[in-house]
Length: 56
Image 1 (cartoon, one colour):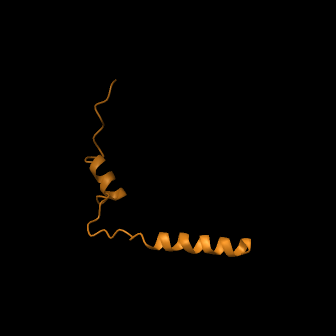
Image 2: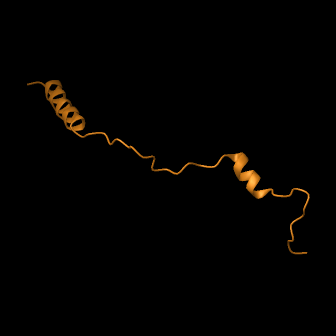
Image 3: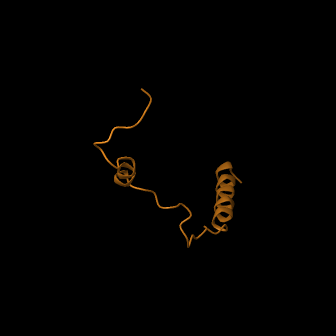
């Protein structure tokens, strides 16, 4: 048996092992929906003419 035959057999065994593991099927999205940039900006800018009452 040549080295290339042994490598092919090892590769085939590895491929069968990988293929035997089922890929998870997600029925529910696990990451919550993210806000858009417009939603984030709208939340921070309630009244753009009013100045913040920061330290003076």
